[in-house]
Picture 1 (cartoon, rainbow, N blue to C red):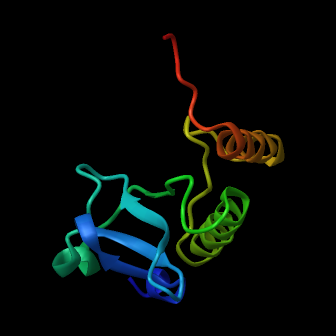
Picture 2: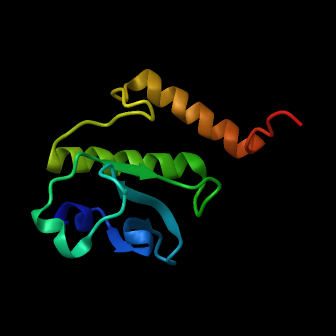
Length: 119
């Protein structure tokens, strides 16, 4: 809880932690990898978590690249404080190549919007 607080993550809606801008708009969220994904704030101190998922809605309160950069810096500091590793959406360690791919995907998504699939 102290590591989350140090990173500006505040407990809130949906029993998740949220990082917000000064104006209160959410930048990204933190969910538990333990089911159901929410945190039981009252009992967190004595609980062990298998991991944390940081995620954002794009478009959001900041441009996608800035949001990714803030999430990544936060994740690195949390790993430094709590241990663990940063992984991609498939559970693989997030390396430079994966980060470049992720950055390209979010830029494309922000520019073009979600794919419409078959119509």
